[in-house]
Image (cartoon, rainbow, N blue to C red; front, side, top):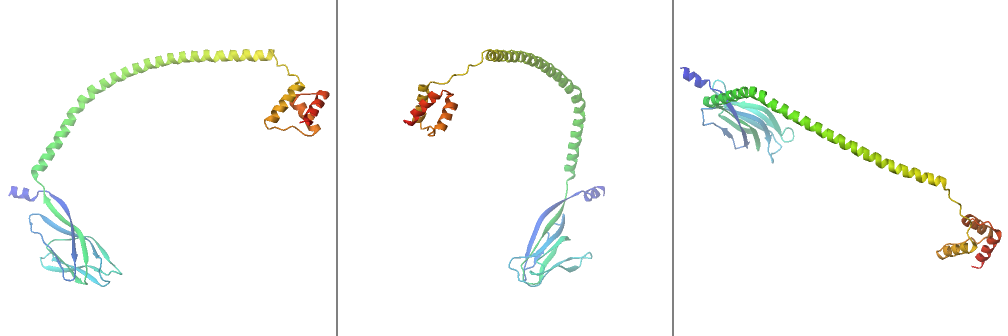
Length: 265
């Protein structure tokens, strides 16, 4: 008796399978299950009109057994293409055998849902899984003390060595920085001294202003500018100002000589 009770109390594992069928005026659908060892349920989700359905009233009906074992017919959905082409049943579960039919209308009508099967799990597989879990937990507890005592010491030693190396590197870098700063200071001092000396020399030896050019030099420069495409003033007053400003000529006789030369061009 105890063994039979243990077999009856074994846990069940649900499995879900897709379900779908098409109904027409002369085409019913019979859902039967040949395997009686497991529990089966038909869960209906949606009822919808198919492509090509006429705009007429469609009534979908289901026939199954009630609680007393007597056959019973139930209307699942009433559809019309222009008003309500689809209906959601939200998981309407029926125990097979089930007959789905189109009581009114020509169709086609599509019904979709899930076929639920409760499968018994093996007790041996459960025991093996529990043993595996226990072994994993025991191995984790045993490895915890050893790992906590040895590994951190090695890490501390390595960290100390790394700190020493970092300090040595920092010292070397500081020395290099000091040398580099000394070189920069010497390099900066040299240009400053040269600049100061050259500036002092410039202060001591002021430039002497250049004197006015000779008449022949001015004529040569004017001739060169004309050959390059330049032009000279044609009015005497403008020409005099041009000579005074460009060549610093103040001698009136030389200016008149240049003006006569200008007019002969």
